[in-house]
Structures are given as structure tokens and as C-alpha cells.
Amino acid sequence: MVKLKLKNYIPQKASSIEELIKDCPQNQVILDNLIRAWAIINSPKYKKILCSISGGSDSDIMLDIVWRCDKDDKVDYVWFDTGLEYQATKDHLKYLEEKYNIKFIRKKAIKPIPTSCKKYGQPFISKNVSEYMSRLQKHGFKWENEKFDVLIQKYSKCKSALSWWCNENGDKSSFNILRNRYLKEFIIANPPQFKISNKCCTYAKKKISHDMIKENEYELNIFGVRKSEGGARSAAYKNCFDDTDGDYDNYRPIFWYKDQDKIDYENAYGITHSKCYTEYGLKRTGCVGCPFGRDFEFELNVVNNYEPKLHKAVCNIFKDSYEYTRQYKEFIENMKG
Image (cartoon, rainbow, N blue to C red; front, side, top):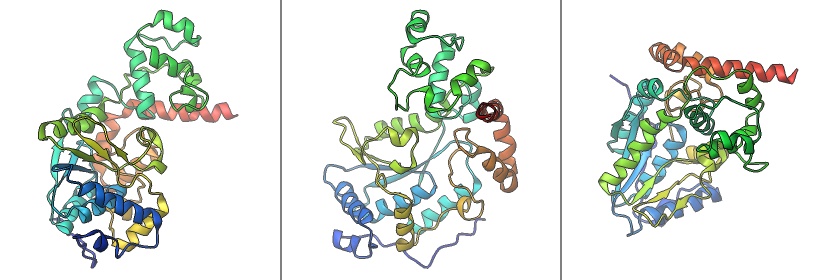
């Protein structure tokens, strides 16, 4: 039985914008954010709203904002169970359900991560890198150090991946292999001997979310992405809201939050995070041991100490990617001299 530790602070739903902002800290980002969230969530345009919860620290703040603003209970909350989740995260979800008197819709992966990795390939470094390497592998690419004009003649159906490989997307583009130091040199010297793919993300979260929104006719999709955290997810968006002119709009309530804004919000509204942060010492949650994590070695040590069964599982699922990443990091150090 999970013992839930509820803080003395009891959250209150607001019935008006004035009530919502009366306890707002002296922080303009938070104030502007709350006013915007109130307007969007309570807009008559939206009758059905879906909010995706992860159990992470950003998600905790987003949930608190959305719940406070949802005066008419229009929002459904969903958690995507990838099959590689910390028990601490699952415990935290139960705590959140009790704190806010809500019930999360729990959705399992269309294809479990072990199945996706075995069928399509393992993730390596990042979603972008994995996507482009996967495309190149599918076209039988030989990891050749040739110019784009030469390679496009041999691999005519692989233009975007070749543009990445040949750094054809502009000097500062995140869609060039140059973005990852010495990666091209490493791959040429050490061609991958295993399949690489980011499909595990697609079938564990992305496709399920899309299908759920479509099947249930949600009009607004809310999820937690911060611009300041970087990575492919934040780079994909220019602002906190997308009016898509399609079946549904997208809203990212904490898009403009920086780390200090998070701290100010947590202190003002009594936000408690999961044991992944408070006891394990992790800086991120999500799929356990994901090779996309910059500090996956640190996370593996944490998993081994706190949830050893998961450690054994991820070391089996991502074995090839872990080893390839270690080789790449060693290669970088050698190149530095």
C-alpha cells in the first residue's frame, strides 16, 4: 500500500480570474501565464480538453495551473504508460489523484518499448539523430564521406537524411549532423551494427495521443514543454499556443517558464514532486534509462540502487545503444587529444 504524503497546502479551484491571481507571486511570467491559461481553458470554443500528464516536475506545475483554471471541469487527464516507468512515478500519480480529486486515464503503449526496439531499432543520442540514421539504414546507406550531390544520385529517396548527413541545412541548423560533435567521423569509423530508430516514442506516446484526441473529439490538447529546456520538442514550437485550423488546437501552459519561474511557482503553490526528484536525485523522468538522456549512466546507477528490476530490463532493451554511445563518448575524448 502506497503511503501518500499530502502537504498542508490544499489547492483551490478558482471561480474567477481575480481569485486565480490573488495568491500569485511577484513574478510577471507566472502572472501572464495564469491569465492566458484562464482565457484559453475557459474559452467557449473548447468543450472537451485533454491534458497529458507525465508525473515529472514540469508536468506537476502544468497540472496545478490547468486544474485551478478548469472551473467547469472540462479537462480530462491522461498518462501514457510506456511500460518502462518508475514505481516512484506511479506512486506520485496516486498522490496527485488524491490531491486534486481527479482520476487519470491510463493508456498503455500500442507496442511495448521492448517490442518496438526489437522490431524497428533502438534510440540513439536524440530523436532527430535516430530518425535520420534509421532512414539511412533503410536505404542501405554505407556511411560514405561523399558530397550531397554525389550521394543523392545513389540514394535518391533519402534527401532529408542525406541533407542531415552532409550538413546541407544551414550553418546553425539543428538538423545537421554537425550539431553533434564528431558524430559523422565516429559513424564513418564505427558503422552501427544494430538497427537505430525513434519508433519506441511513436508507439509508446505520440500515436496513442493522436488517436485518443481524434477518437474522443477533443478540441484542445494540453501538454508540458518548456522552451528553455531545449531539445527537439521545444525547438519544434515557436510559442505556447497553436491555432491549427484543424480538428484541435495545442496549448503548452509552461512554455515560457525558466527554472527560476518553476521554483517561484512551486514555493507559492506548494508543489510536491515525486521521489524520483526528492530521493533518487534525478533531474528528469520518463521512460526509464532512455538513451536520449545526456546522463544515462548516472540514471542507470540510480535505477540499479532504487529499482533494480527495472535496471535489468533497460540494460537488456537498450544494450546496443548504451554500448554505442559509450564508444562515441570515448571517440570524442580521443579526438580532443
